[in-house]
Length: 264
Image 1 (tube, rainbow, N blue to C red):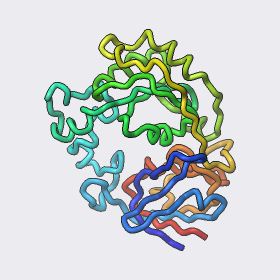
Image 2: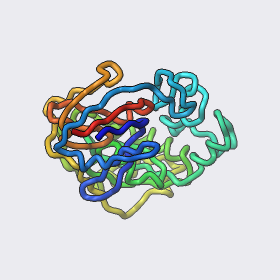
Image 3: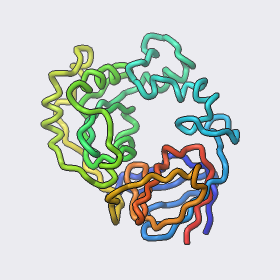
């Protein structure tokens, strides 16, 4: 059976293990059901997630002109501390920025390859942790806007990492950490304006991913360059498809590609 569709990040269900779905315009694929099956992926064309044109994807699923124009790709997306909607200041589109920035945000600790600090909208818990391939995570601060979350993250980055080592995450080269202890250790470094939002009492969330076999030396598939790839699906973690030959494919990094997926 062959499916054709535009790649966007996989939708997930917080079950044990996590359930993954590739959602296309008129169809969807339950990826968990493809574990152990041979899959062929073929690059068809580009389709910018904003304008829909067949133009090379620049970043985040957008063509270059859209990336530098639309609010969904503004700097404050990746750097929450640059948010200004709480001041009534527009970056690219104040209405959109108010909608996204002026809602509850969580500063969290997640352990995927190591303990790291991150920011997400409250509505995106635990989806954000799943997308990062974290096997455990905990909320440490809940604030009313994105700016406060951003400045808190910046302060805590001096004492804990803020990046995931994707190779270690995919190899499952990880160790369990006591995130409650980490939360208490970092409490003293939360900025003054966010101290009242510290979460005093909660427990860590554990996540289980559908993986039959982890790669020892993961090698990333560049579908735009290779155009076609066939492999046996061995697992799914974060937003990565893991194949038995140690090839891995980051679905989120390939948003904006139209592909054919054939299940043999």
